[in-house]
Amino acid sequence: MPTHIEIPYTPRPLQASLHNKLTKHRWGVIVCHRRFGKTVMAVNHLLREAILCTKPSPRFSYLAPTYRQAKAVAWDYLKQFSSKIPNVKFHETELRADLPNGARINLLGAENPDSLRGIYLDGCIMDEVADMPESVFPEIIRPALSDRKGFAYFVGTPRGHNAFFDLYEQAEGTKEWFSVIYKASETKIVETDELEAAQAMMTEDQYNQEFECSWVANVPGSIYGKYLEEAMEDKRITKVPYDHSLKVDTYWDLGIGDSTAIWFAQNDGRAINVIDYYENRNEGLPHYVDVLQRKKYLYGDHIAPHDIEVRELGSGKSRREVAYDLGLDFRVAPKLPLEDGIHAAQMLIPRCWFDSERCKLGLDALRHYHRAYNERTRSFRNSPVHDFSSHAADAFRYLAVGLKERSNWNQPMPRAASSNYNPFTHTGEL
Image (cartoon, rainbow, N blue to C red; front, side, top):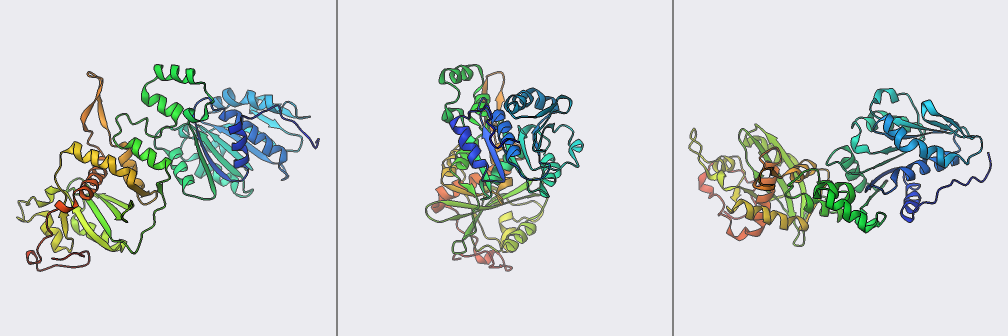
């Protein structure tokens, strides 16, 4: 094989930078807008790695959501850019290029994951990961890379919060991973007049997803989506450790036959560090008291909505009194109109740092919290949709309202209200 091979490929500046960065990382997540040139980049990166690989019988793959897509999108590129390599052989029926050093590049489809079992790989690029079954990488591709310690890069455009989003979140918080987002408004690859024409013909959500790489554009009417997207771009959704020198306040949305949601936050005077989230359903207050004890945080205030004061018909006690008997001394957040609370939460998010792992369930709920679209009026309704996301969203609203009007909280329960007082969570004066 010749010592010098020139591939007929001149990468754009962003592509050239991307190639250089990928060679330094085994794992990478590349989120890019339409017409970025990701398939050309992927094919040429595989080709370069295959040519330079010194292992015996190297194997590389380009994986698309379907075999048909792989052929339609990448096969012509593979033949075009490898055509200058002496003695290269193409196998049309298998979508495979055999290089003279013994390396092979295969184009594969992910629609039948079991058909991929048994292969080994020195490198793989998965294109449009958001459209693939979630099991493909952990169950098929990852094991195939193990014995050769091959690389894997995940490329695509967002499709909401799915496995591709999870990979991006993982990459953001891990040094060994490379991650990047390329938005059309920043790369300038697509000309301005073409972007304006596309914007005029697409809905705002469609445009933001396809050209601005928005993770929440597929949730029309999302209430907190754009604020959390900004938090992600600012690297404020990351690993947020528990600060043992600060007390942890908890903020609750209490359910009986419904879910109970709890946010755990520390206020360091400059930012709100949201370090944890817990949610469960069909459990009584003793269960949640046990959860708090097991987490072993140093607790400050526990804040609940005003309906904690409502007395139950059977016992004649309010849930606040029941909680107090269990050693959980609640304060009551101010009662504000729903929209005021939502606005307070929107204004709070830019001050928040979220732990990406412990708060994942709560963050997913906040991103999904949305208003329904009214087809008749062609507008979003005022009231948010009540679904699985409501509990986390309500608890977060109490966090925002509680911080905003802390001085107006109700006084804590007097000690005389219960003879079973347990001080494990109480830190204030009675």
